[in-house]
Image (tube, rainbow, N blue to C red; front, side, top):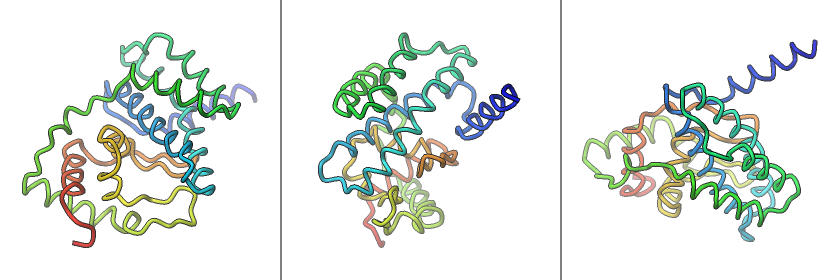
Amino acid sequence: MLIRRALIAVISLAMALPVWASGEHERRLRVEIAILHGDTKILIDPATPPLRRQGVRQRIRSSLGTLGMLARYAVQEGRPPPPGLRKQVADLRALFASKNIRAFARRLDQLKSSQPLDISDFLPLTATPLRLRTGQSIYQSLCMGCHQNPDPTQPNPAPNLFSMAAMMPRDEFVARMLGGIQGVHLTTLQNPFSDEEIASMTAFFDQAQPGR
């Protein structure tokens, strides 16, 4: 019975993780680290409302639970995990569980510096007419319904993507676009867009005005 429960748990976690192409799990690991870093900045910001803070804590807890699994997937692809990663993840979990958020943020800064996300495909970003049309089409058909008017009564509202593109560091914005839809701790959905489509949406968010 115990073996069966353990097997079900492993399968459930694997299904919850986005499916990436071969060789992409190292990138996915760095995406998660960048998103964790951004969420931690929101958590320690004194201007963050209590309900939003609650939702961010849920997301951070969920992300911490996937880092070790992503490293193991990288090993299966022949990509060894960064040296000391297992201990770094364990330390992060312990600091977060102890609610020592300042120390958690400092340790996460170190991890992000050692594992930066490569966003060279998105910088420099040329806003060609085709990209602007593609970005606008994707936004209006698939994104606008949830992201146009964020609901402040939700712990993890779908954010305004124009504001995100304008205010976030580019590496964090790209990481969140690559990371897919992340809401409550039970929800992680695969990002259905290619890098070129994400580049097109980013160009559109950079140049277009909401409501156009």
